[in-house]
Length: 474
Image (tube, rainbow, N blue to C red):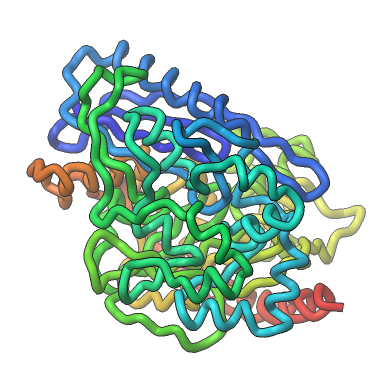
């Protein structure tokens, strides 16, 4: 069997596949997030422990030898480790907002735009540049004690294998990697005031690093590859590799990715160019902070269960009886297709007559409008695949197809883990049929009448968003 490991923000998963890409089994464990005062942190020991636990459970459930394993996981944030890959302090998540004042300053003085023009990466508070700069100012002893500032999957790879600290071009894409040379841009490091911390940036493995495991979770000597991180891994797992084709990941964050061979560093600085395993091929990424986390907040606040969502969506008309939601709930604001660290969610049109269904539908519509905005900015011209936890709601997928006004290739299952296996197979020269592995489970067509309604709604959404952005800057 082939094992894909996906170390997510709130859930750690391991999936087993056969040689034809059929998913044999999945094991998962939740991991905690500590939120306090704009800080969002994770316990690295807990995360690694759950990785080992899901691997032990998976290999016990499927009694077949492991041919190879691929590793992926959440991107951005800062995971400070010592020489053995053990934590120096809790990991700062990509959702963390502590560095928003630094981003505000860099937006004002031009540093933000200069970095984007050099690397194609628009910094946000939870990206490594601002976080490292904040830690250098407020927790310098933590940086002094660290051997490397890694990303999530890199910490796991080092612990599973005993290999030295390393990352790959996909994770290194934000914000220090020059996408043309596929090496760190030292001028960017200097611009962020981190030249004296340059040694914390892990060597870039290009192609992705490989090693044998030490026997925790997987049998000793199992071949494993480190990367790419979850966004490009999902693109591989969904078969999005041809220029113009796109992927929408409806997960904790709403990530829009479009494959491209063109590197355009003009226009409004937002999102990033993710370097892939093929030089000259990138993913134009708009990883918005908005996503299922916004819907989860509305569900918990209104007391709606997840299994009630489809019924509420079916029972509420397009337009949600006038209720509108700008779904920017993240404490660090928004990062794509624009950067507004102080932007917050807004609910309008709510009255005593508004129902739970109105609030749920308006939130789903708002997320759909945000997705349309991101996909347009990323340059979508071809087919669109969709994956992530949101695909479990068939009613939401129909709504999303209508809001986007295009067919959706729905790819279910553990898409990131699947992509991690395909990346590992390519690295090890194992012949797996990527076309067979990435077949969609369904295609959802939009309803023409509803699509026309939502095209008008999208223009209204952009107008409301412009007002909200102006208010956020006051």
